[in-house]
Length: 424
Length: 118
Image (cartoon, rainbow over all chains, first blue to last red; front, side, top):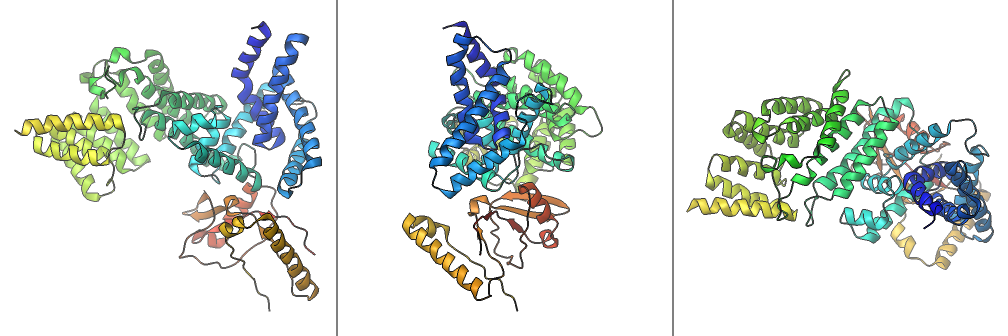
């Protein structure tokens, strides 16, 4: 492989997403932007070894892609019969006319590219799109995942995912969802939507809903990359730092979450020497900056809870009282029965299992968590600590009836067998 | 006195028709439009884009709630309409959110399919 070819592959890895984002802005059309971006790289592969690498590869690629688009539109308009497609091409021509003729004019190049990625994130996460479409589109255009990869990550059939992407792009086009950073008055609300998408991607990777693997690391890495991008593009946004911190601190435990047999290890059973200290260091620093300022948001508080765990060298040293207090803060910001459940567990660890069980009983009575396997799982665990084997066995059975993830089910079954054996 | 004639179709049925059959229906629409224009009955009319392009806007507790998809509640009823010009969906949503009924009902924002009307 030639030097130029290696260089081009590196440029592709580092820059193709940004170049795509710029083309999407210039053309106002996802599919077309994708097509011409690929074509521009193909031309680079052919020309750069012969003519040398251009002084500004990024600008060259954007220009080349843009010119390809102009040609493509001209050619296709001549032969296109369908009204829909002709209207689409007209809109692309209108969009092209809005941009300066030569790329890089007027604005600093970096500012333009950063803004384009920011515009792209907000477009992909527009509320007029369904959340699952927002997630798919973000992974496709910002992370460069293929349709097949996204389908596999969410355990969805490929044609379903492909259709989801087609409809999302179709809606952006047909309803004219604008490519822009939202105006200041809408920004707070829209940032929340973007962060939710990133959080959902991470969560899907961390707690796989079903399937064999306990977690899918690639989704976590993509979410963290997006989180970093958000922090870079929105430096004043404390919650972006909080979200990134939360993801880093959780991901730092990746190597310790499963034992040699591929079975789950709870926090208390994990080998903490396998926790990634670099991620923890970065996460802890981010938590500091996320908590600064007037009012910490929910991601910052969740990150603070993860930080308490991360700071404990051994499970016994965990400051559970502080965790319970932080959950109280979180409940004020984001009242939710799931958060109450987590708080009950923290209370159990700091004040004793009976205190925790009482809170869980109240939760169960309210019925909001019916169908959520972690409630009986928590009840089972606390009963187990108190050696109340009948209650434990019953709760493990109820949890198994609800749990869908294979690794989780294996864990619960093992605990059920243990509880049943103690009954004799 | 004026009336609004609301066309409730069936996208599934339409999608099953052949291109020729659809073309025939479009032609019938054109003939009908021309005819009522000529007789002075027509005050305005449009074809709406498919429901996959629809967005629903509600105002609840002073906050804007925007969701993908057409309006679908059964306990709300069609009560009026506006035909507006807007440069993009955000602008249209902004207008919809200012309609008083958005506070207890729903406003569906649907793009118009452009045809030249007589």
